[in-house]
Length: 144
Image (cartoon, rainbow, N blue to C red):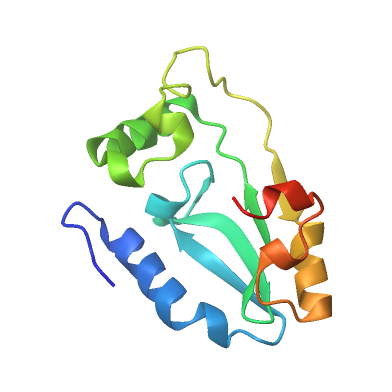
């Protein structure tokens, strides 16, 4: 597993987790306390700025769901996008194309959060399919 020089400790920890742990999580397991560096849109924990309010649900050796409290501080979001731009390879699409950097692109708003569970991933788990391409709804998308 190659590690880029520009990666922060949280990014390295996340890569190690993905390489060594994800496939071992066969029973339903919640993973939480993600590093801030790999969660640019998540709100930081009040008592730990290196960690965000985020969890993922794993089962069958892969991620089923991702959930987090949304970052609602525009100053902090700008700082994170600028940090990502310093190492463009790890930047999210929003940071790379600058969508999040306009002063009015993000405004302070009430706390929000959400959880995403893909039906395709749930079908993968229920059918024992090793690839999402085996269960994807639109077959024309499979080769890509």
